[in-house]
Length: 374
Image (cartoon, rainbow, N blue to C red; front, top):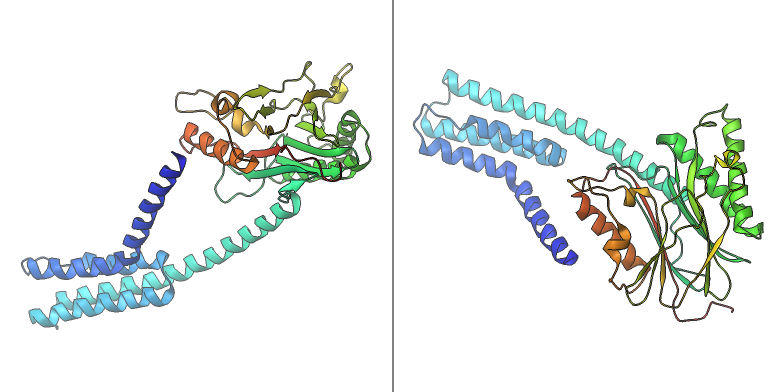
């Protein structure tokens, strides 16, 4: 059903693009027809003036100039046909079209320069995203991996959501998190968390120790930045580990939405912690507890699915929250990438395309094959 919708949407978009491509010259044609079929007191001048203005933001400078020339030629031709070339109203109409065409050329230059600046900004944002959130390999430590980041705001590439996957001596370790706040401050915190994770994942023997290393890194960063978000700042996070052999799954949940385990038969298990733990950055408020690791079986053919609250807090028009466990239960997917594609499409359908928060998605699948080197 999803593919069908995409196909229909693609056909509609293609038809719209074809209409846009011919719209300026279609307006000139309509102006000619209108002028020829109506009494002399009526004129097609609005059509001729509109054509270069329509072309200005959509086409190159050359096409915009060609449209203006065609409009002026059409007006002049009609005046010659009607025998009113040197009358005041005819000259006024021609000057109007030429003036509007000149304005269209200026608009085209402004739009092109703005487009170049936007393209440059997008390129920088894409480079920043690749540096901070690189796309993981499709296979890590014998596991199939898929990840994606989807920004709620158009043309935004990275915010406060994060993911990471790393093969270590302790097994494949992973993280999915959500930094409180927006903007550059959140991006900086993401860089701190990911940098600390990549280093500590290689040396900390336990997930609890790994969580503590991330907590200390956030505390140091808050102090270095003169207390910015030092009191209110926090990061929800799930840290995971699949030890060598692949049949076991360990998780530490620090205030984050519960991951799901999708079974090969379509069943779904919610991996909820036995005791809730505070997010990273708030560990000092907990008496004991910064969250103990829990273990679950990780059978062949199953997929671990982690996500940020952009999924669980997505609402439809009636205000109903999206429930990923209920929506995915009973469905079977060929691999992690298919899981993320289905989840993303389903969230967008649920919200009607009106997402209000970013989504970081990570899926790790265990095949029936043994772990590399095991």
